[in-house]
Each structure stands twice: as structure tokens, then as C-alpha cells.
Image (tube, rainbow, N blue to C red):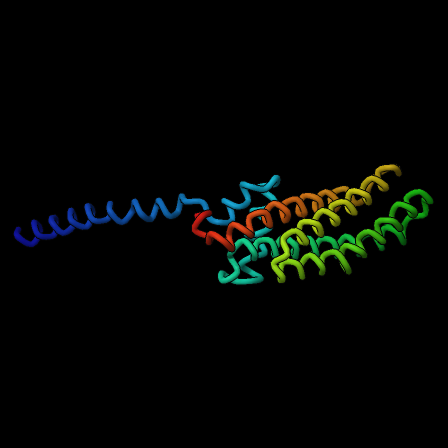
Amino acid sequence: MKLSSFSTIILLHLATSSIYFISPIQCTINRPSLVEQICRKTPHYNLCVSTLKSHLVSQHGPSRVNIEGFARTTLQAIAINASATLKHVHKVFEKTSEKQMRIALDSCIASYTKIVKVLLPEAISCINKGDNNGVKSGASAIANLAISCENKCMATTNSPLRDSNHYVQNLCAVAASIVNYLPQAHHQGLHRFL
């Protein structure tokens, strides 16, 4: 009988103690991550979160989970998509005989070649130098070239690049928004966002 009373007291004590441990754990779980907090400040929250969560930890590891890493990751996601788009445009160009479409695609090839070979490397270099205005200018130029490509394709019967062009434009907007928070992060520390 004494053993069962003692067991009951231990069980009650464990049950009561566990209440104190559950609350802090739940508060931590419910607290938005830095990714979510920064992405809320961009024009494309879902795209931002999915891009950062899918690329960031797998490519950079937890040590790069900071605002600079977010900007770099977004630019790298643009680079991956722009490179794939450039390959796709070449394939579509080879299969197309319609003159207007070939002219539009030729313009898109020039745009995406400039994006992949010039603008993205420059923007990534600007991140390395801490030149936030250079990153924003690069992202803006990339978005403008994607818009130009889309406008030329829309003048034809249908645009084979609509999704890719919009994806690049939206990611550029995300990158520019994230870069807006780099000076605050460098001067005030990441705790401001936590």
C-alpha cells in the first residue's frame, strides 16, 4: 500500500512538473522564425518562405541563417531559375518557326543571357561587398529584363515563358525587400527581428 501511494505521489509530481516544461516549449514552437518574420515584410510571403526554407539550410547550413544569407539565397534561386529559363528558351526557339515568336524569343535569349552572365554575378558580388544599393539595382534590372521578355512574348499568340518570367520578377522583389533590412541587421543586430 505504501508503495502505491508513493507511486501516485511521484506520478502527480511528474504530471505537475510537466506543465512547467510544456509551456516554454509551446511558446518556442509558436514563435515565428526569422525567415517568417523577414518574409512577412516582402511582397510575396509564400514565395519567400518556400524559397528560403528549401534552399537555405540545404545549401548553407544553419550558420548562414541570417538576413545576408537570405538575400544571397534568393539571388541564387533567381540564378537557378534564370539558367533553366535560358535553356528552355533556346529549346523553344529551335522548335518555333513563327517569325514573331522567334524575334521575341531571340530578345528573351539576350535578356536571360545578360541576367545569368552579368547581372546576377554583379548582384552577388554586391552582397559580398555589403553594397545593398547595388543588390537592389541589380534585382531591379533583372526584373525589368524579365518584364521586357514577357511583354515581347505576349505580343505573339501565347507566352511560353509567362511562369518563369513572373517567378523571376517576384523573386527579384523579394530580394530587394530583404536587402532593405541588411543595414538594420548590421547596425542593430539580429535580435531586433526576433
